[in-house]
Image (cartoon, rainbow, N blue to C red; front, side):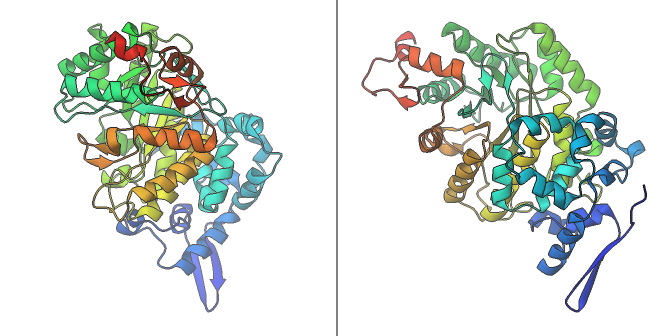
Length: 461
């Protein structure tokens, strides 16, 4: 089958032309500062609409032939093409991008249909359809995707919202970290993971933090998992030394060159996963990987190959799903306003990332966040938090006071989980929820127990 090498559309007196699929995708992307910085964005809203209309006519099958980075030049491209499931793709193989959007929004396209379809979709396909979708569309489609993973508890079940307890400390002070962990647990947070960003990425620091969390988890029989968000090679070394590693973490991106800037290759990730699986520390599942991503990471490494930020981000999800992770999240506003300028752009990016990751079969969460020099505030984060809750987001971050004093950015707090769980009738992961009841931290499934009541956790400390 042959495809046109150029798309064009007349809008009033102007005719807009797009010479490559890469250019068409970039100019069809809703406005964001990073694409402007890279010189990839449409020059006007009119050109953007023209690109979106042209993109709607592109057959989904074209993305299997007209790859954005040549197959021989990029390992992520090779992974995308080599692992594509043609049988799973068959139900939508004859659709254009625009028709695929309509198909996704149908009542008949339910969770079971989308779960079966996921292996047949490439990140470029989902990135393309997301560019044609309103925020409302992104929320609806994501809400229909159900991805369940497990390690010591079960993440992603219907009616559940999990929280990463993030007790970071700028000096890795174990007393400060322990206090934050206790605070988070008493708010019912931590069922996704207790995850620490270490101030120092070293073997001794990682071992100290791992043993601190492991002691807490096992002393109180908490059905959750721990993670120190050090580099994957550090995790491999501490596993060789016998440290208690539950989950292996790594930041990843959507191109081989960008991952190289992180010091990451597919063989290294595979080695780490096999080492973690060999420890057999999970009790209800064996998903042992935790990945974080974010729009702009490839651009910041000058490794984007002329591809827009949102499409590069979706490509990172193809890498993530190769390793059957327990958790994936986009740290949506972390890089700063050079990439996502304001609250509007952050909200749009968060909804895009969540929807694209879910369509590709990933257990997507979101670090709903911004830096202090962005044109955003906590009300913007409240809005995104609410929209992602409706969209079925797997998990969010729980940071003391929503202010990460180690990383210097604003995220979501322990309290925010109670807002969302109460507003939408959501509960923690079932095993963790049962533990909260047993410890008299929660009552009646989701609300905090009487603060004057006896807390078994406090009594045990």
